[in-house]
Image (cartoon, rainbow over all chains, first blue to last red; front, side, top):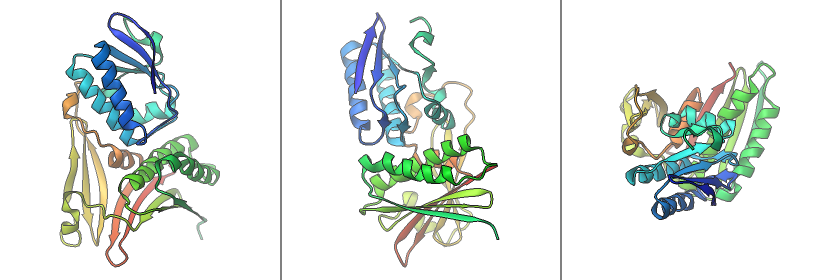
Length: 110
Length: 179
């Protein structure tokens, strides 16, 4: 469900293909992110612009994957969130936890 | 007499049916909102609440279907989820219900939020959330990975749970004001 768009020295630029991000795919999503960290040892800059629906299970998987990423000195940066998704992150203050940008081009130093 | 609009929806408690049911319920609610309601804000809150109620049903109901009721009246919309599955009972709330009215039970705490259940008369609890002061980026390792109750509590103006011992019926009820 995560495809790599391009990479540079420190970062993978990737895209999530899901429209519905929920409990049915949360575990696989987390597993894919962990594989990316273990294989590439880079930050994951993830475009989640296709996501229209997200539930707490998927958000939990995202936070869990971020904990893993931070533990191996990497990060997850999110880009292109639809308004409802960005509003949900703000509602539960996950915008204080994740670095969030409008697009790949808006991410500093990339 | 205030106008009352009601809708009943049966959800199959299957993850792959979640978005279809969500859209159906949102379409009904949107079509019946009063003109003075801020549709964008109300729809965002309803989407968040109903998504989590349906997700909760898939994960915890323990029975084949869940009923969602929409009631629109007099300045607010109520969303009720009822099922006869497993009782919601974190922190052994059942032992407090009916005895310790007003007690505030902490359900979760992390650097960003504390979520509590306040014991009300009967087998009835009301959820409240407090934002913790956090001026720096929180330590990721201290963050919760469970957001369902938090999302509904912060989206709704009131969010409650009631357990009917005689029928075994669980009822979650979220209310959103139009202004």
